[in-house]
Length: 495
Image 1 (cartoon, helix red, strand yellow):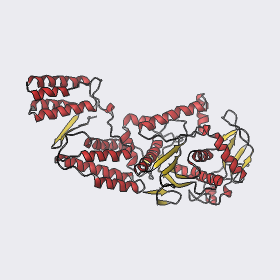
Image 2 (image 1 turned 135 degrees about the vertical axis):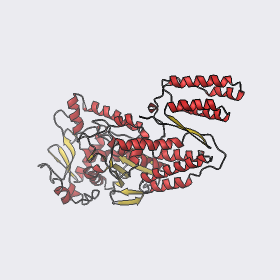
Image 3 (image 1 turned 90 degrees about the vertical axis):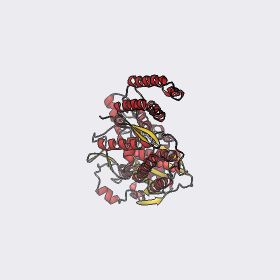
Image 4 (image 1 turned 180 degrees about the horizontal axis):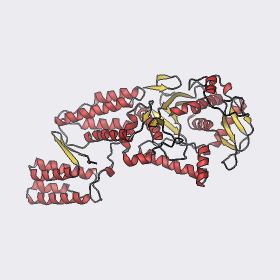
């Protein structure tokens, strides 16, 4: 498998240092507002990477932090009249709830900056002692001039960074690009005791300390959005390698492209956010994941309702071919060529657009062969398995099925009575299949049973009953497709 490494600026063959366990650290959120779809794009990308690495047989040790002490958290908490801890806890809960809904696997460890102050202070002390950092008026800064290769991740020179940045003059700094490791306490803000006086950690040092605490001095993969390359990840490399002497801090640096709304990057500061919770009221988790995966993870993507709606229809095509159908004894469809294409795409720097194309080509072949009466069971199993590597569940969003159970139960009762009247034992036994819905609206399995019953009626030449069932299904916006391989249905409401 090849993976693009931002540090080397090219795609490289990937293998963990020990050949077995992948140590992966992904930068987490600052929990001061609702989780938005820009976050989701990033975590879908890294969830997919993890799933594929595990599919290849690697054991992944996944760590993702929460930056739960930050200027934005403090400001928002003050505005709401609550503690920073209370605010952070609210939005951490929101993060877990929405990521779970998107079928994003949880990291093995979620360290929080406020709970890791001791190792953070220890790391800063090491940097001060070896001359890589210095204290000034209660703050502690990292000496960027002490690291000869500072800028190697963003591929910039120190002079170029300084010329291209708007830097506030700080008389406490030896160099304008020096960055804070420890911030002296301010009135009304959370603080902890330290050798330099009360204060709180700087943003960059938090991730260094947490990554090394849970994964060691050298990582296999460090990930995040492209907006973190500079200064966050650049500073992480500098302070981490200066503290331990272990080079590289991370063997692979993987960065996802950013989500846009219109022409602008989606961000809290611009106020152009779409929360994951809002998106999930409109679209299924599968369609949102597929929308993100339809673009290469390193490319920018514009979020649109039209795009999500198109993906909803695309997911429906896959769900359609996965519906249970009667087994055929004819030669089964061989999915191997499509699986090979899928894996070749994933091996090529996680090329999910090409991987998805292989799945859709497989589904088209399954439709063709099913119509000829060939078995597609093996192909269905393959499609489900490959889809699961992309985090797709193919589950139907039941809330989209706006069909009342009263009407459903009425047609069930009518057909049951007419089957009993035939006096034929074979048909009378079919009444055992008739199960009335006990909920307010019908679900997918309810429709599956009715479609199966219709197929049985056709086999017994009870065409009037078969037509009655089909007419009811069509009245509820359900189309039925009959083929040599069986009957499958699809819900397509007009609005």
